[in-house]
Length: 232
Figure 1: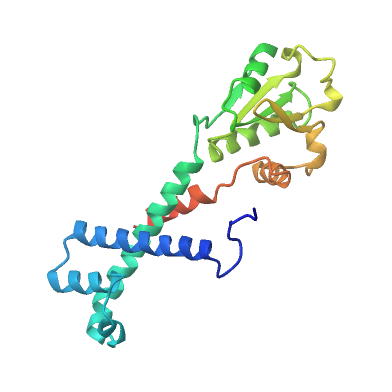
Figure 2 (figure 1 turned 90 degrees about the vertical axis):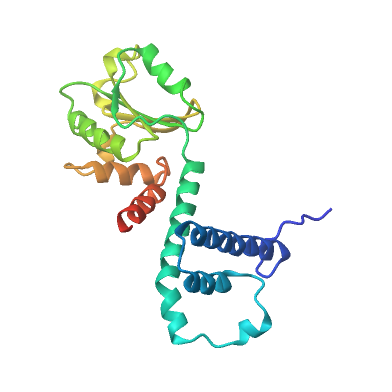
């Protein structure tokens, strides 16, 4: 049987989804009116504007300037609240697991394996294998410390090559190395990672490098919710 999913403009599925969004907005708006206890005249005007069952006469009647001015500011505020709520709900659906917010030092090969294998299956784990005195390692650790605060759902770790139990695989000439895992699977394996950056690099350069390979989650939801809160 042919698939009934609607992917084209004008299809029944798209119309249903669009109607659902409009109805959600109307419901939110009416609930906001009830919560805010507007004066009766203003309340009634806004309720009529939001109602999906207005009569033909009301639909055809021209809005007076007084009515327009009365509802304009309140309508914008209500829309802003609705948008903020939608963004928060979407952010909550996409957020999961613990927040890490710092660069973790792994002390042994066993701790290394635990960090890879025991985290939530959707958690991205970034491991920096370094050694004291190797060029670029200290700078990369500073960059990852910054990114850990910017991407709290990502677990950023560092471990000395001599502590991994596989120091023969991670000699100084392949350091610093960046390994990226998710659900125990190796997604990125970057030896001599700083060779792919400028001689002087910063956190934004490391962020751009990881994003180039799609290894970091997007930050726009968190940023937009924060912007909405500051605007209120």
